[in-house]
Length: 247
Image (tube, rainbow, N blue to C red):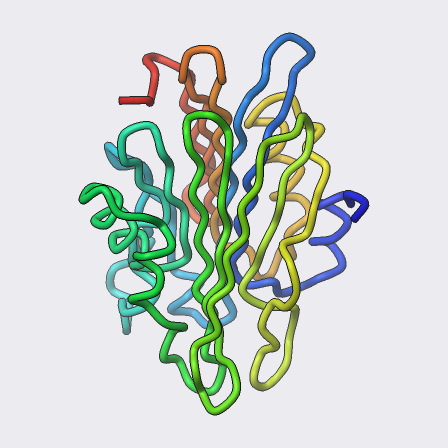
């Protein structure tokens, strides 16, 4: 499989829904693990969100609390850390994975207890990723199969310089919306910093539907992390390294 340009891929898809990118960059001197997660929305309730930093990652939050009508499925922690591992998902399965890892159990075991979202008729897939200290990473999608049975797919990768893998919830518009299918897409990761990648990804997302974006680069030498959050409402947050994020 040849790697593709993720910005071109996204610019050709006005509604991929939620997306996860995991991989590794290289700035010419050292390697950096890469995490990116974005959300898009079509309804007012879904668009009325921002990413807010918390101690172990980020959470989604209503931009205008008075306009929030249904917090289920849209308010959660997309990114959380357990030790030196980072979890990123599109729902509250983040907490399920965190709890299992804390008990010495696995990413896969955690997700075997979960199913796709109950938002008929779309039955939105649950997408999840796990990045460990070595740079190895896993991706998963839980989606509706035949007879409404949950189809669980898991993918495991070793890092390669300037490459990553991307998975999203949808392939585009439709009624119901078509779920992502096939293996995660192998993509180029040429940006040398979190800020550079965040700018590229944000500009490639459909302006009407994009809601929030999180990008983090983790220095493989020492665990220092650069984090960029861009919110459609609320602007940009750039956190420079102050201490290692590995625990």
